[in-house]
Length: 157
Image (tube, rainbow, N blue to C red):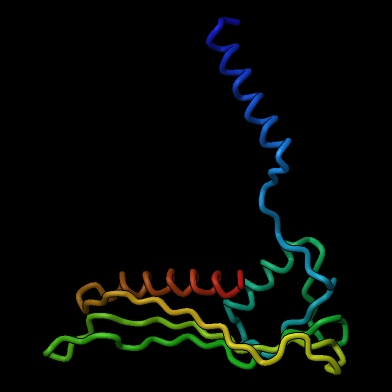
């Protein structure tokens, strides 16, 4: 082993030891205080519900069940909505900017609904995007990507 390889190896070992010694750990999924949750009231095929299921089951300690009877905690969706609002137009009334909004209204209770853990809450995210009629198909795909990013933001909250 030549001197350069030896010095590089020692430097890498030193950095690894320093990171381990300071308590550095990779970010992990949060540990939830329950083992079974039911997600009720979501529209059929809701992309937000699917994202929530993935995030909850990624914790490893909690699983999503189908009915409130099997669950310890129930997250009841009151509203899962996507909106497209016109934010700006030209003098000729052509749309130039859209505002995309994703909204989730929910509450969390115990399975028997005797105790409200999180009262009625609304989470909303919005993104603006430019728009031209000539690139409508591409803008539709961009809007879908923005909606997926907004769903991920809501799930992270």
